[in-house]
Image (cartoon, rainbow, N blue to C red; front, top):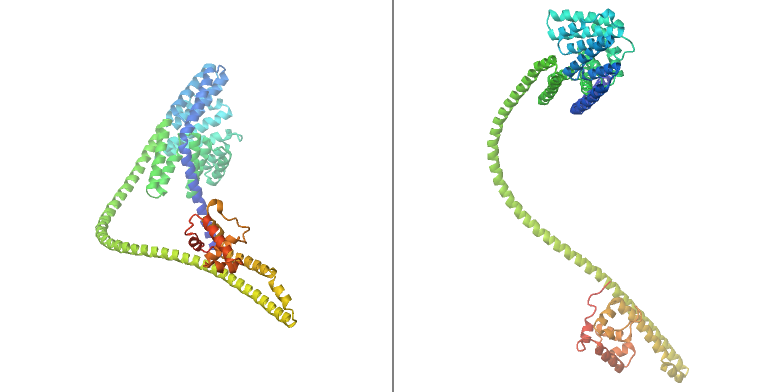
Length: 553
């Protein structure tokens, strides 16, 4: 049971990995196809440089090499241009007596004719050569070209009479070619794969060589593209669709990067996408790939490939039309259902609209109530804040009043103690018949001055603690040049003390004089002098009584 679980788990992981890899390869193919105009421009610029070099080159060997390089660039890129330069190269080789280059060019021309679907003309071109007189490297190319010509011809006929015959002749020529294949040839692995598949009928051996070729050849070469396409066909024959799709995509990418306009991979990908894709998107992708294949075939001017694409294009168009008919049928049925729903919807909308009006009216009333409630809450919050502030001030005031009570008790205690001491002193002096000394001691001003100073200091502290802004507010009632300078923050002047008592409600001069240890006349003089300094002389003391209405912290 556990073994089955792990097998299923790893198969699932493999499936996900393959799906992700296919998506990445499809995205890369689309990116490469989008850059094909850039690759075309680079190839054409390179060919133009070779042509300019050819015009100025006079050496025979160098000119023949340039002809061959131009031909190789046109080989699977543009049929007519490749044919033009291979013919010019043949004429120049004949003219200069270069038999080796002549034989090489004739074989290359035959190969080009076979790709273009001109099979009899390819055989006619090869008939100009005697294989026994060719060097080994050209013998391999000679027989290989015969192999390609007959295999392509068999694929073109695709019948029960000529196709098997041509395919057998092609296999015989491949057998003849293989003894002349050099192991150092970069195509060695690929053609060993061809030999293993076509002659030995050993697909696993062929797959091994194709994989070696894919691993060793650059991605932007035709031989890499051919090896990938051969691997795709190999895996497809074995029923391995995942690897078939993977290597088919690699072949398409390699064809696009090497500008192989004469190709089969993109056509096969279009048909595979049509068969295995899903819905309209698969048809659109298949149509896009087949259109690119058709444009490539037209650019290359390959009649055979144009015919092949033209035969496959109607299949995609018919699939698209069937998909379109199914879509239209679906839309018609959907339209009918939508119409029924629309009628029901209109009835529902009317009912909903009516209910919505009621709901809107209710919401408006609720909103108004909420708004009023919000305003009341805000006012209540403001009142709460004000109440909090007043409570805080009341607490502070109470603390200050407690301080005043403590001061009052302290003063009373001092004077009670003082009175007890005097009472004791009087009794003792009378008992001792020291009345005259007692009288002298009681007549002394030192004790009264000391008591007065203590009282005034404590009075200043208590009053300023309760009304800290009193000096500043009192000065505000006086003219600028007559304002009172306070000795320090905890002490008041005589004028300030008199006005402080007026603020506390003590208005009689005699009472003020008793509290401040002055005569009534002196107090009167001070009050008169203060009124003279005020802005409002008549209402000065009334204004003083109204000072410090707000108790500060």
